[in-house]
Amino acid sequence: MKIASFNINGVKARLPRLLEWLEETRPSVACLQEVKSQDEGFPAEEFEKIGYQAIWHGQKSFNGVAILADGVKPVETLRGLPHLSPADTEDDHARYLEAEVGGVRIACIYLPNGNPQPGPKFDYKLAWMKRLRARMQDLWALEIPCAVIGDFNVIPHDDDVWSPKAMEDDALMQPQSRDAYAQLLGDGWTDALRTLNPRGGVWTYWDYQAGAWQRDHGFRIDHMLLSPELADRLVAAGVDKDHRGREKASDHAPVWFEIRS
Image (tube, rainbow, N blue to C red; front, side, top):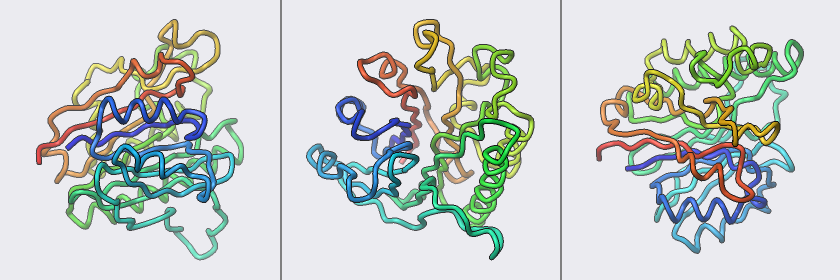
């Protein structure tokens, strides 16, 4: 079973590239981020034409997540992260969608960027990460095969970026962001891509600016965290890097992992 994640940076703008990737690589499940489409405008029929069924959580012009499955309909289990207190209710961002597919619980996330920092956007990022950890702890307690995957907007280690110096002031690399990510791993989740590439040097994102793609000035912010029940079945993980170099591509490349059935 192959499970993938792709920050598509606009599902309508990149639809030809997305369909191309799906047909070429044929993941069993594909999680999308930055769909940038309201619910009623999501092009579900285009995916159905090539055999994929979808659920989605849209938002006009910004954010948005979706889960596609090959030949089956994902069974939605949660839309949006729970709040940690009754007073904590002001969040209309479409950033979290969770479903069951093929006996695996899959959470598709688009974690806040947090820039500029310091400031309210960075505070929102850290608060969102606390909510994510709480949900992941609930999922952990279920003792089921589970994957939390997507654009985490965190560069976990210095060897996950072409130049730590160039990104040192960015919200993606702040100690608080890294600590929050490390807490997830400390809770027992397995970073699939890092586990199979322990020396780092694997990028999932290249900016459109300053010739970042041509100069290979990238970094790793798209992650796949697996519960023990799923990590025990991990056999491969990678990045479909060549798709970043195609015409009118997303600034992210798809990431994926495979598990034994």
